[in-house]
Image (cartoon, rainbow, N blue to C red; front, side):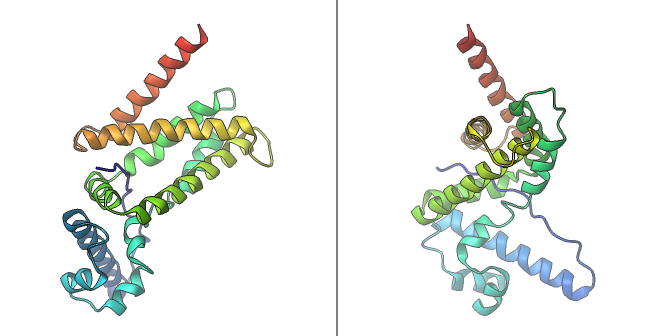
Length: 209
């Protein structure tokens, strides 16, 4: 099974009956779609099937999600501005890697959704096109983190140090997500992430000998 992290929905507070109904419909579409993707595969699931279960038309589906893939990928970039803010706010005397780890602990870890991560992983495992879209999203994360690290050091654009640090931090996070998934998403994700970064520190210390 492919392991992916999927974050909790980031919704604006809904004011008024119409807005609340729209928010509820969007959540229903996402929940049903992810369940069907996990049960029968992403490519095998049609928009018509999703719409029928939610009791909406396909036209209504596309009002909420431009494509079937957007159901899986929605919310994934919503926390990036906050993640970058935490990186920039980290004390300047501490390392870039510590800044990224702290940002991950504060922003991504509390928002990781176990059930939807599991279902997204099953969906991605059945679809090469979806894996490609996830790779594109990961590049966006890499570029965003590298840019924040560069700005933290007063640079206008990322240098090799910022890019490598961002790549290493994301690699550790992705390995933690893989371990989280292999454990059935039962262990607290924060604990799994901390173990992964602790292993990196151990390996770095051994390398420095």
